[in-house]
Image (cartoon, rainbow, N blue to C red):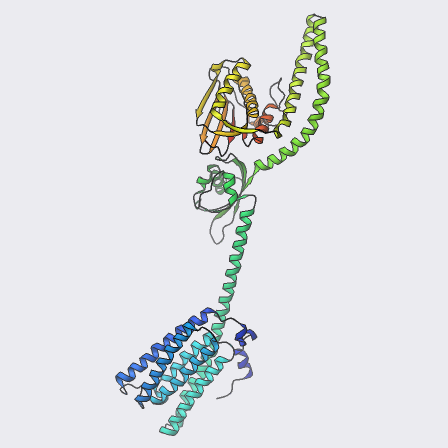
Length: 541
């Protein structure tokens, strides 16, 4: 045979790290493959040993020397069992063990061929399996050694047949052809194996990269300030972060429908998916009363429909803006109130003196106008000064139901109103942490406002207390005409009023005091009448 060319040898060459196995860790899959192949070796050796004992030379095997065939098969079987024990207990020196296994296969096959009449027995084909199996896991130039060793053994055995038993010279052609097959099998199998190994290594690395990326994404999602939900096409929430628990005011369910998280959110998502809604929507979460903005982003790939929902706590943004506004307003009002009150007191005093000195009707009307407007300015100054009380909260546990009953009696008595026009409805109760003076002032403002716009009949103003899970709501409802839709967005703005004698600060101050005590005051749009709602999340008792 011709010697392999330099180009052929280069094709078998692997990187330096592969040539020096001591510098590279052998993959576990190589050891598993070697154990599987040795199990095949045990089965073949056992088959040869049994056939030699049971049939002798009746088969084409062992046709020349039954004893040699049986003895070689027995040694082969014992060696294979020993190899299996070593592979299981001492998985070290991979290339050494592989080389010993292949050399054993080649030598034993040569002896079995000699005992069975040479190449005619067909045992030389068995070496193709050994070389192919070794090429799958071998590295460097060892696979050339295995093919060359098998070639030498087959050709030597054929030479013995020619010179000892008188076989014709032409008998070298089949062994030569199968020797070419040994090298071709070694080369092709090794190339395919290297491709598979490379693909496996790339897949393993990509799996690690993907796991790292998923871990990073999970950490980022868990730490972002916005709530994040991943919803599939069936409305099932596949994943969410810890922020969702805080926004909902309760532990969020695992792998449940979006409706169980928030009906308002589910409705907004359904509208967006139908194309009837916008990519963002603002609403109040039912259990916590938190005002949020939901933003919907389509994130599905390969035909899957997944939606990522980002929930932003608008109430916090509004609270931050309110804090900045209050800081500036506090500095302004402190100076204005001081500058206004002094001349206001002088004007009021002068008006009273004018009224005492002259009783003419025209002048009395003018002094009354001065006095009324001075009183209005005085109320406005007092309301402005109340803004500074927001930061002085002295919260205490208050049973809301009992507090409302006492407040209502005090309110109608001091305002000299008909008690029958006010109704207290209880559908639940609870204990809230609230400053007693602040709650008194908030309810007084809401009560005056409701009475002013009501029809002033029996039950015209209703204070309705209701409990929904761990959330407590107090509704102050009147039977008036309600608030026009175009004015509802301005209700809680400072100095906005539709009442000529009002200051426009009552509702604004009421909302600020509620926010300072961890509650929320908003307006509920009803078909008739006005409905102002105070919401306490996480109520005990």
